[in-house]
Image 1 (tube, helix red, strand yellow):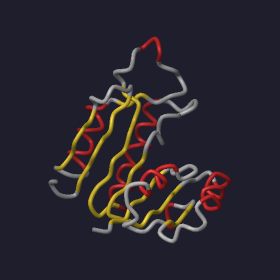
Image 2 (cartoon, helix red, strand yellow):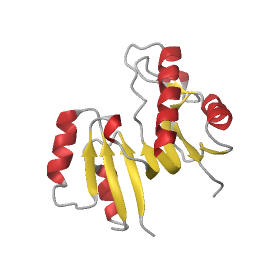
Image 3 (spheres, helix red, strand yellow):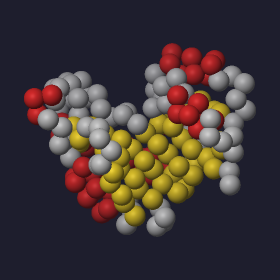
Amino acid sequence: GRFSIVDWGCGYGGFFDYLLKRTTNFDYTGFDITVPVLEQARKVHSSAANATWVDRVEDLKPSDYLVATGVYNIKFETQNDDWLTYVLGQLETMFALANRGIAVTFLTAYSDPPKQRVDLFYADPLRLFDFAKRNLSANVALLHDYGHWDFTLIVRKAAP
């Protein structure tokens, strides 16, 4: 059936294009705080009747799903503990906007230390799993087996 989805940190709307190749039976909201990028996404997808583009969290409406890919990887000079606190708050905000669940990717703390960069955030998958399980839902999955130096945290409102 038809579903709705928020693409948190949508950039130019690449995920919208990905979905469109598979189905047209969805309502998409692209959210990004980088206004010039969002304006370009709006322009490129101006004929898409099932796409909405917003740059403020306050303008987001609840949707079935919310996805965020690589949004929290770059922390610049922010301390890891401060960035983690920010990320945990963001997870709460995202989960509140999703009727069915969220999927969020992070760089993993299990990355090779010599290859890690100080401006990037390498999340502890166990810490995020624990936070989600204790604070968001009993239905949490952690995907850390797909060959990249990142992982996906999936938090559902109900069991699949």
